[in-house]
Image (cartoon, rainbow, N blue to C red; front, side):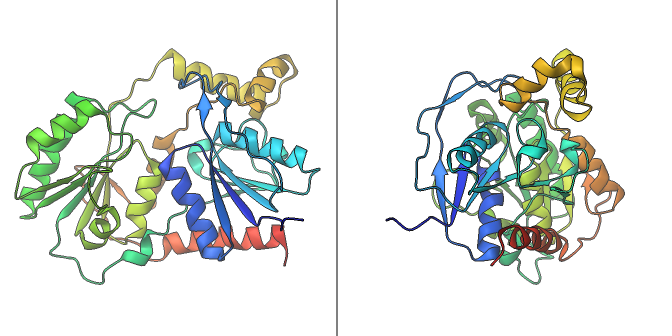
Length: 337
């Protein structure tokens, strides 16, 4: 009989989610296998109705890690098909109610109600601290550029303004700008960045050559991160450098309001009249957008980050290690020896 796998990491293709789960298993020193799931169907800020085309099969693992709606639906199916032997842990916000999961490691932007199996961390998990260099006060200003993530918008026009303001900021400090794109940076945004960020400043494009992402964070005198990605913000904070968040324009409106209203009534308050809608959330067919500004505002109030254009705050060392230690302790308690 084949040996029982240790840990499965269920990845839906989002690099930030995968990095968090890898940081967790690496800190625990547990053997893990990444299961990259492929989905078919429309991707929409409110509708998440996609079908997995490569579902994993037995032998089932002792633990399955997931993040966000669709991978959490697969994790629940694995637990059911394993006869309940597989423990399932979700990072972020799972599809539907948290009671379906053995443990949920979340952060403030998901607004999950308190429960014995819910742990709210200050920030998503990151392993970037290992690359920190002791003194980088003379280093460049690092600019980490994400992509459109509802409700934040990052197109060519927004990217052009971002690049110009970041260059002016770096020049005002007599520093070079060291910019990096992400998997979600659109082609028109990349084109705008390439037009404006010219030598001696540096622009590194995702998947073009060897990645300098981690080393850039370590060498930077300060870091600017766009507001669309909490995972990128976690990486920046883990580097123990002053961090500012560039606020992207938002497409708020009916779509965002309806999603939050449905989630509040169907999942958070569990009102009887919303039982059919609650089933849609449980099935991962709909999900409410995360409120990233809620988390960033909290970090600003704690003097851990600043909004771009305001005075930067000194970095707090070991904050990321504290969150990782809390998550590891709860996983060890859950899984036992």
